[in-house]
Amino acid sequence: MKFTRQIGSFQAKSDIGQLYTIIEFQEYDSVLTGTGTIIETEGLKKWKTSEGSLLNQIDSETYRIVTTNETIRKI
Image 1 (spheres, rainbow, N blue to C red):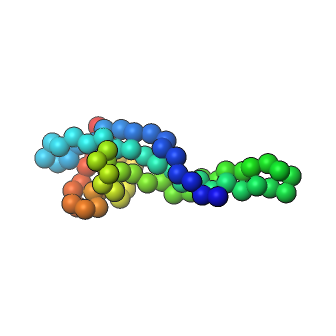
Image 2: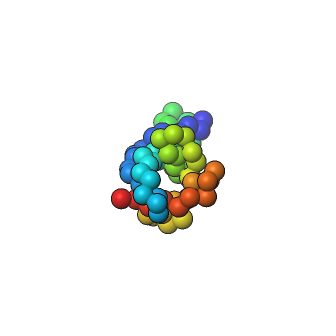
């Protein structure tokens, strides 16, 4: 069974000074083994602004808002 969990948040700033709260999500896949234990494996990470806009990660400090193509950086 796949599920998504919020794993963190941070502040980011655009080149024109706009501040954003970024929420980081981690996808997981849980599998029931033959012995009855559940194993969770990590999948993709996703990022959204607190307003709900999706982000693409450029590097560990830089992101791009998909809908506006605006570049933002962690502060």
